[in-house]
Length: 115
Image (tube, rainbow, N blue to C red; front, side):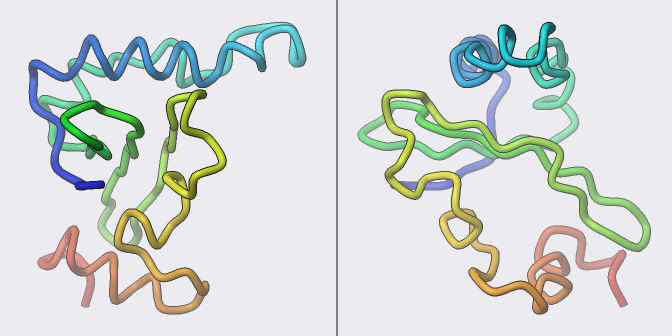
């Protein structure tokens, strides 16, 4: 599996993956979860989305928002046919499996922001 920044041509695939990943929550919570209505074309163009690719196919994604003093993981979605394989685990995306050292990892994403 390879992690890479999403490209503009990925937006439709990302949108479809998110719809499938969150579909089962609609009946559980009585409405659409927020990630189902996000504008992924806009997020991709801002460089906020990375994808997990396996054999050339997008199987997961992460949406990150770097702020002045923190990094927010806004969304992690995995293709429902690939859930349970560890694709959504923090260490799959380059974050530590153990909490506590996330600031060091966040520096890699926003090196001029975290001091």
